[in-house]
Image (cartoon, rainbow over all chains, first blue to last red; front, side, top):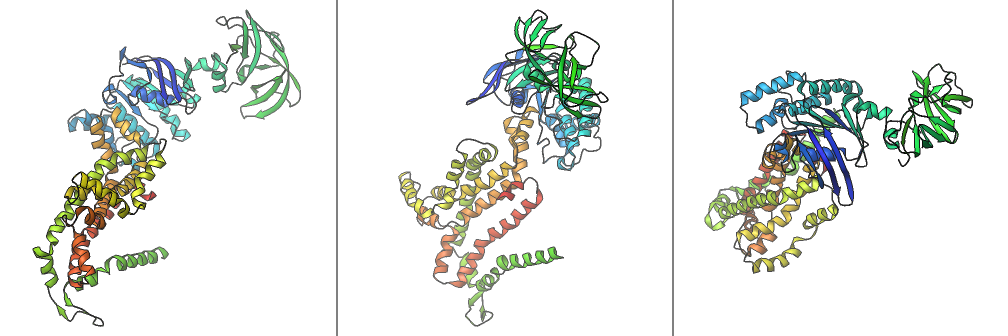
Length: 346
Length: 268
């Protein structure tokens, strides 16, 4: 049970700054996703937490104490990498027992704990298999067992599911979630897949270009993005520039009413709404706009419709049986409770 | 079927190329004289082998010198070359191409050109005409082979293995001992054996730096060949070639025992 605090953490490589002033507090037993496009500094951050890479500036604290002076082998943060998972010259039992061997445990005790851990990851009977003889998912589970068997303070997973096929990924998500909750180990995992982050994590930290964009519960990234960058990363491209005055926003297509944005000062803002929240031909009369349909894409369970509102283009998702034709004018309604404001500088 | 035939042909070629030339050598070493057109020597004897075992031939002394020099060269190559190969194989940095080129330069620059300059330096530091001087000069052609081989082994290795071990509680030393060394061991064995052979077959460098005081096997063998003393040359050359054959067998064993970890050698 360990709280991890990352304070003003930065990492510079010559001219490139990989991580810029990262602030992050992971609560004890929490499962946090570090989400971001590749090259955004996620893995660099993990390496610094694990003690494999010294930060340029900033501090890392476990339970309030700085761990920067503690070398990786005594820090108590175990890292599971995406590739090169298992030691190739060892069998499954030797791999899982490695950390215990380094702690000088007796052979019988190691064997007992390895067996118990293999049971937990559902690989009983695989003790003597060679590492290379296992499938990708099995290797992943052995690597997880090897990390968990030493009861680490912090578990760091680097893209744990990236190399698995879709079915296996679901199964592994479930397994990681279950084991993590059962053992209560503070866990940070890296992913570039926003769906995975949202499904698996208690809280998500979105990193873009080495900067923390938002650290919040998964739902917030969809409903309350802090910037256009965050909204875009979660596949929301619907923006409308306007001037906010109280709960009224004046835009090129008329003045709209919002129920949010109290924390924002009056002035230039962007209005945004998720594609699935825009209504077509709604009986409501607030925030009704005239638009033109550009294209209609049949997505199976819904229609993805590109529309033109004034000079901007929005995407809306609507029921698969809705009557929308390319080139036709439609009336859309933006329910005030679903409208969201982000600062215009983004 | 086609593969079988190809394999047979390959075997035949290897045997005729490597082993057949040894047969006349063996015959020669037991012949007192043997001239064309006689199919076999008219007279047999142990004259050549008595010569090999006699102190005046210096074969015994040369054998020990050759082994001593080669073993030291291998040890120094590991100490110097392993860190270099690790960096070249695992990391990207500016000027890597240049460093690789410089490290392999001794393979392209004729040794004799370099030796003259080095000789003067060695005289200044009292290394000329010494055992240690010969070891150092053998390192010049041996190190590039060692580093090239090992850097390609490391290219197939991943730093993540070591990082994983560290976070699991292994110190840097124990990580090297329990993770790095076992993973690179087959490749390291081969590189060490190659390095041994490079030192083993040095002639010019030994003659010039050893100044005739440090006598190795090639220095005993070459005068016999140039003097056309076929019988004695054949016996000494068999002593000389024995380690090479042994190393060939050991190498194939090392390459065979853990094919995956040696993968890097496939790049050569």
